[in-house]
Image (cartoon, rainbow over all chains, first blue to last red; front, side):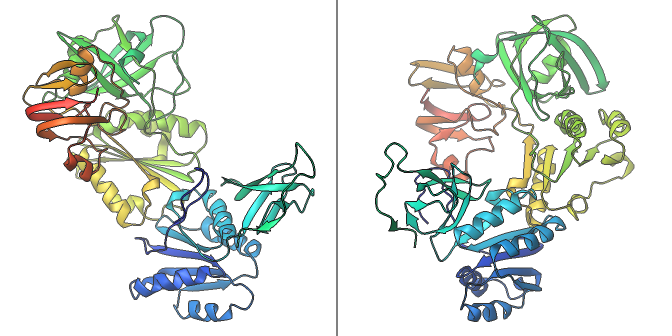
Length: 199
Length: 321
């Protein structure tokens, strides 16, 4: 587990079965591997009460096959996180207490699913989340409020307003994004060279 | 909070015998027109000058959170207790001026909940009276399950049943009615928050059943009516204040520390909130932990104590105060 540089920077744990009457897994890309790891020590009938919403990365079809082989009572693959979120919303809106939510994969997936879940009264600390795969960040430009997905560089050029942004560890659960702040506001043009740092 | 915050003089304007064992007290500001506003679940500390002892007990506010021209509390008489409730019943009369604290809420409703499930046993109904007024005012869905020995002992049962109708479920054990906790928890919508207040056993049962049914601890809120333990008198040394304090058999360590003029921190005075956590400098003897805050490991390590409820037996105890 990474130590947070500031308090708002989320930290993640490891997926492990919780006591519950239903289990909802939401994962993207390599997050599938976290579910498969949990399956290796979960009880044999655990997935009878589980459903899995998965957003596969291109070329990761083999993980889909292994997830469906767990025989959850429901399995759904979505082409993108954005396409998966309404399904998550719909499921949570009719769910009962006893359902446990497990998130695995990129920070973008975990953050956006957490944001949806909290609107249904799930406390963010009651969500079991494991980070797997890319360190790319979802960033909000604090100036134009535009959201930039899968940011890998420091600084990053805002794809909405064009400012050069320093990507902070300061995280907003409400908008599920790290904060990007203009890096050369005092002296335009003084920004350091763009480097890939979030792999 | 510490006792220096207990500065609000209040006039006792009404004392009502609600059931054979419960009295309700109304306080109005001795100066000024209104108290501070509060939220459902909040409590105040009432200061009692009981002979040579100064008692400071916490009581849930049960008046309407929107009506702050007065505060109301209800007190169950406990003849086996340390004496605070007896003092309230026997000594507090209409017209007296007493000191109370500003409200503190350690049992507040969570407002992103989709539904609020309230479970009360006996006198544990009091915080819910204010909480239901607030939930109802704000149109938030809730249901109450209230178990009491009998209709005669169930303070406010009739009043709240009239006011909140089908949201209120009553169980009187003398009529053979039992609250089925598991049933009450079943089919609650996701995002329901559970609140329980009452006897120790009810709270333990509710927490155990909810946990077994997959309710996360973040959705379970409890308020224990804990009183400080009674025991043999002992002495405590306060390292920083350079004082030795004698704790009487029905006095809490915190009350004794306060009586010596040392301003120690506290909120709940019931072993729940953790505010009075104090480091132990030396312990030659046995700490009798009575709180629900410290972990078992910390209790066993004899490095911390909650002076609001816990006691000491042995030769020498030195606290970092």
